[in-house]
Length: 438
Image (cartoon, rainbow, N blue to C red; front, side):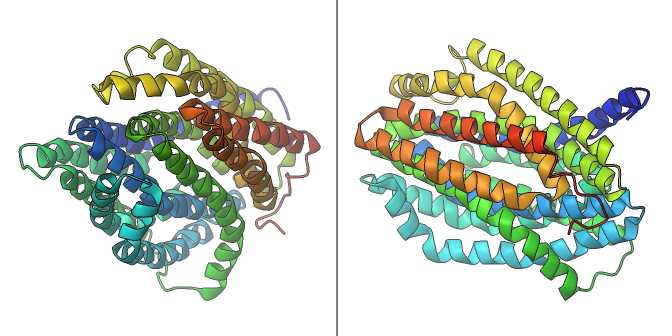
């Protein structure tokens, strides 16, 4: 690849990544606002939000699976010069989103109480509050799923600006509603759930409106849906490993006490914020690598992969510096309880230390998703979860290592994935060209 193309390509990465960064930061920023608002209600509501939010993250996980799979398929068709086919991937993904979102909402009404009781351990007050929050918040799952399908096809056609406006509008409204409903309206934790539903539903409506405006056929196409589901299978298994890890981490933290669980919620939401912000580079990678391979430009895809890994490292290091500097003040933004603050400091060294590695991992995740190399990613995540994270955190419970042991397990998870992703990048076997990966 010629050096003359490099500055233009880097500008293109930035033009896609910066709006995506705003989108990715908006949701966790809202969650941080939600956490801060609920945190001042007391220890039990904050712990309940940790459990309920952890369970509802299943919907976000399903949405990300759908978005990532749609981005890769749409980007290849866009790179091959067929925008209509790229948008059609979004139509079929939206049909999947409707069914999946309704399924999550119904399942939450039925299973909220037994699931939160199982996760809360010996904390019945936390379990009851978490179940009440979950039943209401899950009503926003269909809107959430439709929005993530919209993210998928819009990223595939290299449009990250419209999603930025949609997400900012929905989350700004919800961020204003949350404190009003929790305090002046007197709804408490329930107000947080209502604000969540409002944001998710509004976001879904905006993305459906964008899809309809493309004037493509909206009828379901079983062949395309089946192809998306086959791709989604591997991403789903990969995501299931993540969910098992994070739900297990919440369950182990709960067994160290309410203060430990509340501190885990603070550290985890800050970690999610960093992860999703770093994922902006991965989204640019998905769109650009997919388009390059769809247009049979394998050398360009490999060049992008190397540069994107370096960019991820730089961003991860910057986050590590900020988190380290913020250690004295960040936890106090979310809880005034000194026990919660002390527990958060047990997780902090691990939280800081993993950031540079995580920056590279998330960037290379985007490269391989854009390339459609999801089978390798599935196998890697299962090995890292079953052979690293899960044994480590349950050993932390058995040995009474506290919250620091839980976060050591998360760090091990990142280290295993980093090593395997770098090996895959060096092999070059991920760079398969064509409008559809065979």
